[in-house]
Image (cartoon, rainbow, N blue to C red; front, side, top):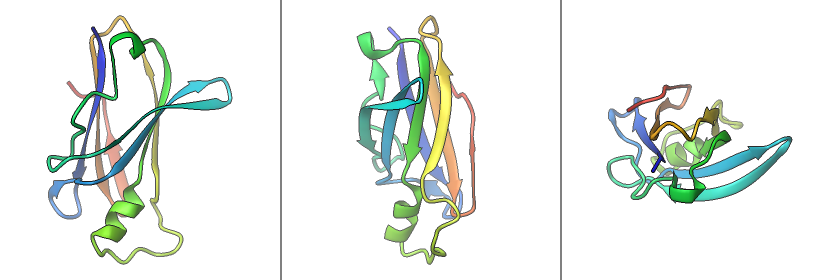
Length: 117
């Protein structure tokens, strides 16, 4: 059984990205179908996989992380509009693979991601 997980680290403060709203969409042509919403826990992770079981299938997906809201809640003075407000990651999943982990390292002015383990 495959699964999709994520983890957010705040590079600006050197800590997990706690309380970040995340939305997961399946990309169907030019349409986005929202299939999951989560908020990161104290460790910057979601308490359950974003996809697993029968919902874990091949296709193109999009994760959206509400980074601007997170930094505003921490009291960080962001310009308006914020340079990074919602971080959008679009990626493909091959359901023959067992686990996709998509970590995000953020700051108010940059981000990095990769396929983790």
